[in-house]
Length: 291
Image (cartoon, rainbow, N blue to C red):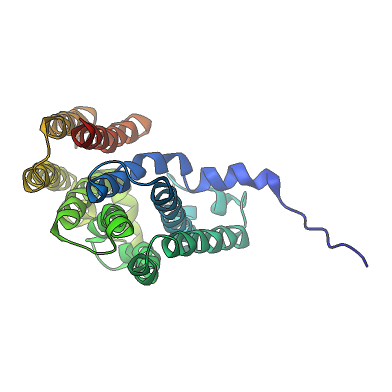
């Protein structure tokens, strides 16, 4: 009996990580962990921590992968994105379909090991993440819809711990949606001319770059207000509110880096600043719950 030899394209694994910007998952995980910590009222059991982490990785990887698949033709035309893996042929379409399928399986399996409600709601998450990439084709609210895609994480983690949903994680998700929506509004300012030529939609294209920055600032202010309201509602201790204060400072600094007259810094430094928001809020929450 002949053995079946499977040729695993190991050289593509680093390309998969690059294509979905896997390292940026680290920036998104802290908000899921905040939901997890608040639901646990402290440190969770190790198995819950592992399954929530894997579910988050699966969800984010699927969201990024399906985005690359859906937008591959647009990316090929956009000077900013034409060097991505699908437009250049570095990765094939079937490669990305494989990665998206594995991500869904990871998400489903992880949610199954959390609790029944998490597993039952999992298909809704998949559908939402699959629909989001299409929205830029017909509505300028696509930037906000992206914000809510990231905002699923804290409420999902809460459900993963408690098996139910209440107002506290919803308020946390609202804060995350506003923060992420603000980030996406500014990030797509650099594509406003391309969107105009290709009849695509964004806040910057609909209202102009200056107004887009005003909207982003309003969203950031409201986000901090939601974080503070959550701390008051859950009677969290002072380190949490120090985290809120530091987050407000980080968001203020973001507008020192970029402005309507200077969008050249929409690169690694801009991403790092937004990453500091999630890690700062996570540390503030963690310390407030363990002291």
